[in-house]
Structures are given as C-alpha cells and as structure tokens.
Length: 219
Length: 219
Image 1 (cartoon, each protein chain N blue to C red):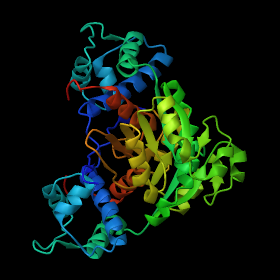
Image 2: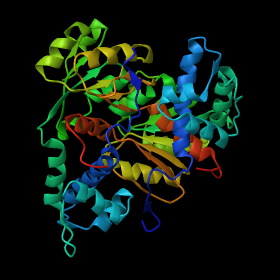
Image 3: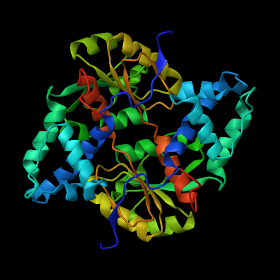
C-alpha cells in the first residue's frame, strides 16, 4: 500500500470551470427548447448563478468566442461545448454494486442523452443477474474481461463502504483511471487516479445544517 | 416571479468547512471502528486530503480544542462534531418524486444512522403508493398537511426536470427553506432559500473528461 496516497477530489485542474461548462450547457439546452436563438454571457451567468465575466473567461479557456454585440448563437455554442466532452467519442463506463444507488444510476435515462455508455454493472450477489434492467449485471469474475473488451477507463463505485477500498484496488490494477465514488469512505489510490467523491448524506446534511442556523458564525 | 432569483449553491457561508467537518467525522468513525483512541490533526488531514492547519482551523470555528501533545480523543471529537449537527435534534425531511433517484434515497440506510428522518415521499403517480418501502408515498394533495405536521424545513427534489420548478415553488410557499435538488435544472427561488444542486451526470462526466485529457490546458 506504500504507493497509495489519499487524493483530494480536485486533481483535474479543469474541474471547476468544467462544472460550470456543464451548467452552461444545461441552461443552453433549456433555452434551445424554448426557441431562443442567441444568448449573452450575462443571461447565461444569471441562469447559472455566476458572473458574466466568469462565463466569458470559462469560454475563452476552451477557445470559444462570442460576438460582443450579438452574443452567442445558442445552437453553435451547444455544439462547441459538447465538442469539449465528446472529442473522443462516447465513453464506456461500468458500475460496481447494484444496490439502491447502483441500480438507480443504471436506470438513469439522462446518461444516454449525455453519451455516457454504461456497458455493464457488477455485484457479488449472483441473484442480481436476474434484475430487470437494460444494463447487464455480472459477478466480479468477469470484471477483467469487460474492462478490457470495452476499454473502460472510468468506473462508478456504489458498493457498501467496507468493500469499496478492495473494489477500488481491483479497478486500478485493471487500468481504470477515473472513479466516481458513492461509498462514504475516502479511497486510497495512486496519484494518477482521478477520484470524485459523491456523498449523498453529506449533500443533504449540509443543507439541513444551514437551514437550522439562524445566522452563520463564519466562513 | 419577480421576487425569484437564481441562487448559487454556496449561500450558507459555512458550507465549505462543513463539508470538511463531515469528512472528518466519516474518517473518525472508521478509526473508532478500528479501535483508535487518539488522533492528530495531521492524521485526520491525511485521511481526508486536507492540510493539518486546515483541520485545526475548521475545528476552531466550532470551538473544538485539541491538546497539542496528545491530539484529540476520538470519542470526544466525534461527539463534539455531532453536536454541531444535532443541536436541534433530528430533522424531518421529505422526498419529492419516487422515481429511481427518489426511491434510492428513500431506501438509503445511511440516513438513519445520520439522524436524517425521511418522514414521507410524494409522487403524482398514485400507483407508487403501493411501493414496498418503509417511507410512505403520498400524492401531492397531502403535501401541505405533512409539511405542517412534521415541521419539515428541508426537502429533496427528485422529480423530472420539467416538474422541478413547480414542485420547488409549492415547497417554498409551504415554508420549506432548504432544498437538495437532483433535477438537472437551476431552480429559481427567493433569496432566503438554501439550495444544493446535485447533478449526477455532471459528477460522472467531469471525471470522464479528466480521464480523457492527457494534460489539462489551464485552471
């Protein structure tokens, strides 16, 4: 375990701007549905809760240019933003664990729209293979084969916390480089691995805490 | 709609330190299970991916003191951290929408452990009332009654994106002040409302993007 280090989930320096790019795209898709043809950085900023300057700065990182007078063409801007993500085509990912969270993600229709291909899921319980789901459920003995065949570089960990580190270790040994971790533990991984920890209890608890505070103490 | 503004999800200024506090607690609970009695800010920082200075600074915000020589007592520290959250006792929350995400959250056993009481869930589809689940499923006509009876101040929105803004509006009108939003839209709310947007596609997509980048362009 000597070469395993605790990683912060900010390893990819583009992550913050990237999250905003994803917000802009979500907002643009809604505007497109409403028939909007042109948009200003000001509008996009207002829709997504950031400043107009930040919107322009984020776009400039990806070399996306608008017209100061006419703003941005909605259709073209969406295409430009999508090219940031899909320049490598769609990506094959797997889900480890078919409990509540794993199954919920496997059935989440938004992913298809976003060109996230969930090619398989895994569970130690063989009875899970009979689950009604479009995403096949395999036992762990097929993990190596599936990762290789579909060139899987990213995996979702949705196993119980006691199993998460072991599953993570197996994934890393098979060449997986990106992990979205839903288990409420901090995983130890080599330094080149990108980890995003999503702790649903924390997301909820922090809101509950803020609501129950009459006035915050400090930052 | 004039008094509705787009909010950033950083409205509670304590949120960042609070998220770290939640990480520290998770790490401490694991250490406690392993029989560890004392812990140093250095250890906690290493476990959670932040600096020892940051750990001490976060604790000082909540007036938690350690002993420079002996570090912190694990049991006492957990109790101190928990008192930050539970000084008002446990909190009743509701889930709007019993699709995949809503049902997955309703069945998530971690919440009980964390004193998050999910008292009810709601869905427009009356057939959902027959779901096998410990959390009752009601139709929307009982929303007002449930919010009042259980003094609900926080709600989870897990409805389809087209319904999210309307559901949010109803919750706000009933006095709900905190919202965890799983719908991939930016909700417009009055300025006193605390919103936390959790977009699972974005969480996954940002990792996929980072993995597919040989070297990041910029921050």
